[in-house]
Amino acid sequence: MKKVIKHMKVVLIQNVANVGEAGQIKDVRPGFARNFLLPKKLVVLQNDPIAQELFKKKSQEKEEEIVKQNKQNKILEKVSKKSFTFKVKADNKGKLYGSVGPKEISKKTGLGEQLFKVHYKELGKFRLPVTIAGKKAEILIEIQKE
Image (tube, rainbow, N blue to C red):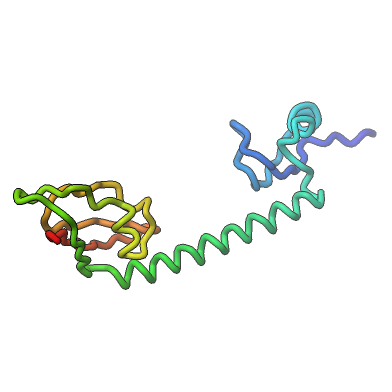
């Protein structure tokens, strides 16, 4: 009597629509794996050495992400509710000759540039909401005439 294999376990190398995301272990039908997924190099068998490398790489990426988030959280706690002053050239009406944007704010606060999107073009005090890894904080900036 022939043994019928109903499913085989594979590890996804790339995201596959209607199947899963890279790094996941999935049960798929043998024909689908043999005829589509394996020839297109979208998956490897679970016991393949490449699969073990994928797991190691994925765990390293997770660890690096945790370290990065912890570092940003420490910086966020440090700068939260603090005020940062920028001295810039401006005309008599309070309009800046340039702007204070994400690059300048990032440099002064130590937070990532991608957290700030607005360019400030006039003198004044502004509250900037910041969210990192679900934690919210507020940074105060003051733009003064040089």
